[in-house]
Image (cartoon, rainbow, N blue to C red; front, side, top):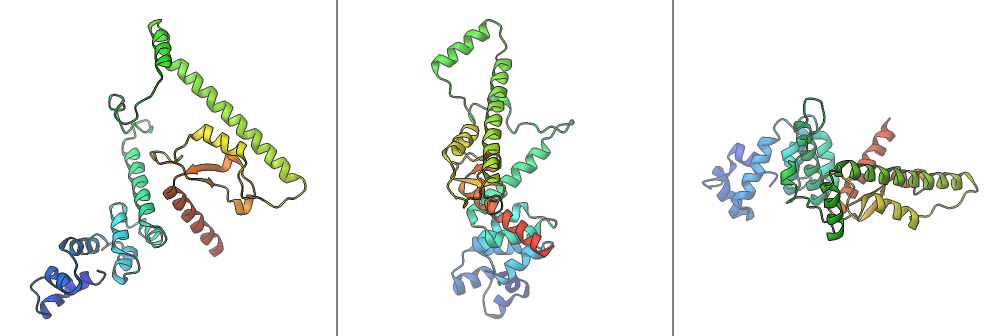
Length: 262
């Protein structure tokens, strides 16, 4: 697969008696026409991206992993992507690409004031994120609306109050953790206390905390590395799905490597 671009360029298949690169690849390596097209297309896309083209040519990583990142690859990010392709599984690369495309779309949809526009108009939301209200709650809200009461104001006040309560509880837990660390030293435990898990779930629910990701949270990620903090401070914890947790650790690894080189 890695040799196909060079074989095509030098027309080695003709010297071996084959009519095309496709016939050559199928009979000698069992490669389909789609696989050959993919290799040749990646070579073309990576002409101005030597870091990624080098991976394609030397076969250091699979062509399937390279195909995952081609849509977001640029001359500016090629070196970073080349490093990530080496260490991340395909599923995590797909998540990385999806996140990058969402970020670009948010930027493109920004209005003149610099605030991002929603990806979906309000009228299209029910099919995407339909609210599930109990019959009792819906009845009470409708009654208030019929009285001319602004439901948006009521709900905004309730949501603000909820966020404030969560922030205050997290701050209390954080302060308690800091006080405990300031006392006699104890061997740090990897076990995350139930109270910490509870407030994180109260804040984020059961899904990954990364915007636009709707996958179940599988890990609590320490944004402040546990190896350095030796604490499970809820202010520095985020629930992540498997792929975003893998991405987060790859970023931490890259940061550590850069620090060692400074």
